[in-house]
Length: 122
Image (cartoon, rainbow, N blue to C red; front, side, top):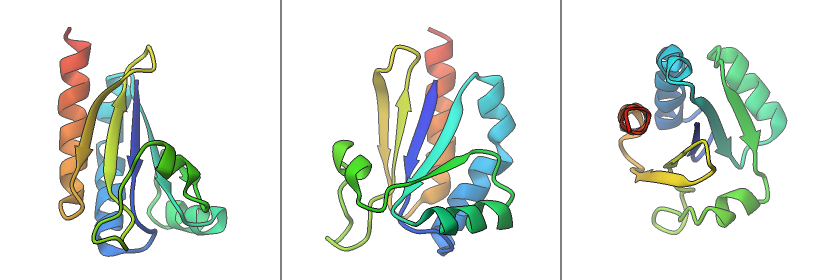
């Protein structure tokens, strides 16, 4: 199972909170046989620094041209802030859940774990 979360920008308060919450609960995702990927428009160098600074155990992907963001249909907030959206993708590659909340970044982690546990219990 995959957790793909799009976030606005490295080194911003909400994005640090979200990434560190995913980090702190990463073992729960691994136990549920899920992998986490974070995606933003930041450069690879920015992601490397961000990941290292906060000791993130999951992969951050660079989407500088926003092509991945656009292919998933992630909308901007107020037309200027890149959207914060989390997708739960099952083992068959089907998107099973989409959670959108620009201003409650930690809730993305709780929501992802809840949905993954529901899917695993089916």
